[in-house]
Length: 225
Ligand SMILES: NC(=O)C1=CN([C@@H]2O[C@H](COP(=O)(O)OP(=O)(O)OC[C@H]3O[C@@H](n4cnc5c(N)ncnc54)[C@H](O)[C@@H]3O)[C@@H](O)[C@H]2O)[C@@H](O)CC1
Ligand SMILES: [K+]
Image: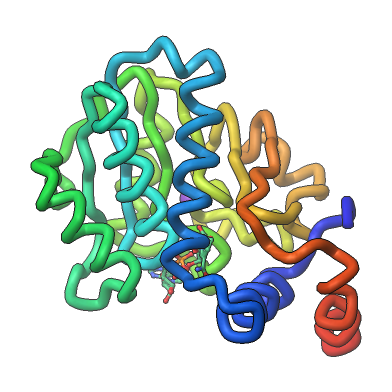
């Protein structure tokens, strides 16, 4: 599967894993957050003291909130910035937000007045495979603030603004030093135009069924492609 999967295939695998296999969505999210946090603490960012987590209101944002909470519990200084309308947040994002608040994490609502992100590591958890149109405000400014920050930039699943299917930037995109992608390589990651946005790439296993169980889904989705 090293040529990468389309986002619709990954969504079909998600649905199969949650509904047929029975691994709850929140468990997959927690597995993703744990895998990414462990990788952060194992890599050069492990010596970093401060982390800024820039969260959207979908499940990518939910990943970011869970990662921020686990880093906080590991004794790191964590600042969480929420971008977008929380009323429209996905169920999982909302649940992660409640947990982070209950554990006393610092959570700010991002707006244009947020000058820059001052942290050793800036985590991009704005959008993942759900990005399906050009980036608008306030996400556009948030992405520019991420790209201007001096910290090490790590993208959660997909550099926000990049299409996981074409590898093209939808208006603007995060230029990550490292992308920690969840479960599977994405089809768009192998294009040369994607390279400057992805940086170093690592696929994080989070407990999806192995490819022998997924081959029918993949074949069916690729037939619809
Ligand atoms: N349980 C699961 O399904 C898991 C999902 N995971 C995470 O979930 C992500 C996918 O989550 P979502 O499908 O919620 O989507 P995203 O979190 O990628 O995007 C959030 C929402 O933004 C909206 N959107 C799309 N383009 C936009 C634009 N240009 N401007 C403003 N809003 C825009 C869409 O409605 C989308 O639902 C993955 O990338 C991954 O990070 C992981 O936690 C693994 C498990
Ligand atoms: K992201």
